[in-house]
Structure formats: structure tokens, C-alpha cells
Amino acid sequence: MSESTHGMWSSRLMFILAAAGSAVGLGNIWRFPYVAGENGGGTFVIAYLACIFLIGVPIMIAEIVLGRAGRKSPINTMQDLTARSGARSGWQVIGWMGAIAGFMILSFYSVIAGWSLAYLFEMASGVFVGAGGDFASAQFGGFTGNVWVVVGWHSLFMLLTTFIAARGVGKGLEATVKCLMPALFVLLILLVFWAAISSGHFVEGMSFLFAFKTDQFSGDSMLIAMGQAFFTLSLGMGAIMAYGAYLPKGTSIVSSAVTIAVLDTAVALLSGMVIFPIVFAHGLEPSAGPGLMFITLPLAFGQMAGGQLFGTLFFLLVSFAAITSAISIGEPAVAWLVEKVKVTRVTGAIAIGGLAWLLGLGSAFSFNIWSDVTLLPGRSFFDTMDFVSNNVILPLGGILIGLFAGWFLDQQILAEQLEGTPEIVIKLLRVLMRVIAPVCIFVVFVMTFVG
Ligand code: TRP
Image (cartoon, rainbow, N blue to C red; front, side, top):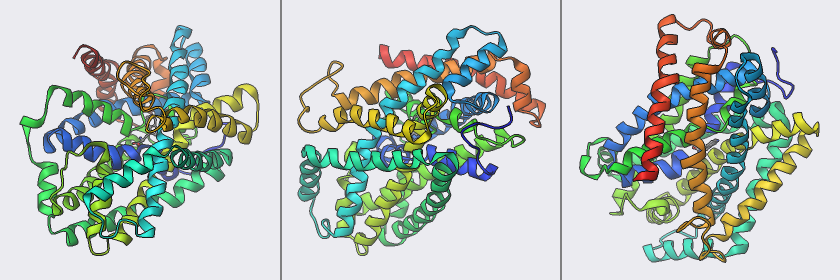
């Protein structure tokens, strides 16, 4: 098939913007700086880069290849490709697992993204101007502790996501990334310059991000680096596969994937370059954990000249990044519903958005009325969703995608999709896809459960 029934990206650039929009999200701006901060800065960055390029890029290429070869939702693409390859139908589990993981990720992602929206408005209103540390943490605690407020922002974010998804691939997804991604890059560059000039601690921030501190890099850090690589590149659940289904024929998959990974990595590193100089300028802890973005940063912004404006721009950046990611998390399920039940895009988007919203209530409650409730031992509803999707389903999905594309897919199909790629690159890719990536993921995966 040369076209998808859902629509197509109008150019290679639009695909790259959409996939980069999916990849660049809370994972880059909220999560990357604090996990790097907790795991030894520069040493973690090296491990993370290795995971991105040795494991992430090959799996991303595999997802795009499968998506473009099938041209349908991941569930039906897998059904199609297993049939065409004479492989066992059990491989279709890749599509199903992905759809389930998508619900789980979208549900808690929307809660955190809702916080970012809320902080956008708080920053703009000047609540944090001149605020001290106690105020910033009390503010965060009071905010997340109020069930109505958290549910309200979660609902607003899900509504936005559903609205864009309902408008379809061209008028919804592409139109959104076309505006928001360039804006995102401009905002980020602006913030880097501001942090560099006004913090007076740029060098300290940079050396934290790039200097080796092996003593803080524990055994777990490697696992965290790999989990982060998967999450940040949106891999393992078919989001990129769904986007690959809309990629025009004749564009190079390999160079697109490398471009997307480079952009994503650049945003993560640049976010670190904004955040750490600000953190150091105020003598704050770089390893503050998940509160880094919602407590430490507002505090720092409140203390700095121009902080109200640049703080507002910062949370605008985060909100843009979150929305272009959220639409990709829901896409596999929306596309499947449209294909399977033959509903319109609008109905499909509302159904998926509504279900994810409902599931998200559990995560929203985890910070207030359900703060004592555990789903898995010692894990709140929110932590359970995060853990099961990121640490179980995504790696497992990654292994299966690599193995399927490398061993079981009709290799004629692989060759067609990678046409134009130098022979030596294809050889290298196949080794990475079918052996190195699955083995590495498996080792890390097992270590997560043993250690
Ligand atoms: N990559 C996004 C981020 O860094 C999140 C995301 C979007 C995602 N789509 C995904 C994560 C699919 C896993 C799977 O925030």
C-alpha cells in the first residue's frame, strides 16, 4: 500500500517534526535533568547516549520500517506483516501490548502535563516572585494535594489532546507540530542564552552535566539510563510505528531516525543547560528528584531578574512539548478503533481520550485522596502505571520489535523499506536490531527484577 487511510505527512520534514514532537516531551525536560542529577551527571549522560544510539536508534528504525510496510494501526500492521511473512500470529501481541501501554502512559502523562499547564499560569500570575523555599514546596504540596485542582488540569490537558487527535493526521497532528515544534526550539534556545547570561553559573552547570562522577553512578543507573532512552524516544509501544505508517514512500528511514534521535538528545541536554545553571546559582540541590521542575525551578525563577517572564516561557515550552507527545501516545489506539469499528476519527479520539482520562483519575488521586492506596506492593496507582508501562511493557515491546524485524519479518520487506541505505549500514543495523539491542534490553530488564 502506498498511502494510509488515516492520511499522510505532507513531507519528510513533517514526519521528522511529528516524530521529534513525540520524542521531545516531559521525558526530556522534566525527567532527564533530575535523573541525570541523581545518577552522577556526566557519567550518566555517557551511558544514556550509548543507549540512545546502540539500542534506541535501531529499534526506532525497526518501528518505522514495520509501520511504513503495514500502513495501518500497529495492531493491524502486525497482523498484516505476520501474514505476509508467514510468521506466527502470536507476534501480533506487539500491537496489543502497545495499545495497553499507550492507555497507561497517556493516563499518567496527562496528569503531570496538567501540572505543567497549571504552573504556566501560576508563573505568569507572579505567584512565585520573591518566594522562598518553604513557599515553593508548600505551593506544590497544596496544589497536588487538592484533588479538584489536579483533576481539573488533567481534564483540560486531555481535552486538548483529544481535540487535536480528533482533527486527524493532517489538520490535527501535522498542523500542531508545524506550529509548536519551531516555537519549542526558539523558546529553548532563548532560555539557554538567558540561563547562560543571567545565572552567572553556566560553567558550573555545564561541568555538572558533562564531567565524569563515577562514584555517583550506581548499578541501577545503567537501568535508569536505558529506561530513559526508551521513554524519551517514544519506543516500544508502537507510537513511532503509527507515525511511520504515514511516512511517504522514498524518504530515508535511517537518516530520519538519526535526525530524530539527535534532536531529542539535543533538547534533553539543552534542558539540562537551562536548569542546572539556575539550580547552582541558587545553591540548590541538582538531585532534588521529580520536584526539581515544580519546586526548585519556580523558586529559582522567583529569585531572578526577569524570572517571571522566563519562568512563564519555560512552562510554555514544557506544555508544548507535552502536548505533541501526548497526541502520539494515543495515536495507535485511535487509528485502530477507526479501522476496526469504522467509527469516525472524532468518535475514536473521544473514546480513547475518555478512557485514558478515566484511568488517569487513579493517578490524579495518588497525590491526594488515594495517597495511601497501593496497587503493586509499595507503589501508588501513579507509580504502578509508570513502573509497569516504562519498566515492563516498553522494554518487552522493544525486544519483540527488534526480534521480529530482524528475524521473522520477510527480509524482502526490510530491504524494500531500507532501499538506498548503503549495504554496510544495513548489515550493521541488522546485527544491532536482531542481536545487540534485544540482548542488552533483556539483560537490563532481568536486572531490574533481580536487583
Ligand atoms: N517521549 C515522550 C517524552 O519524552 C513521551 C512519549 C510519547 C512516549 N510517546 C511515547 C513514551 C510512547 C513512551 C512511548 O516525554
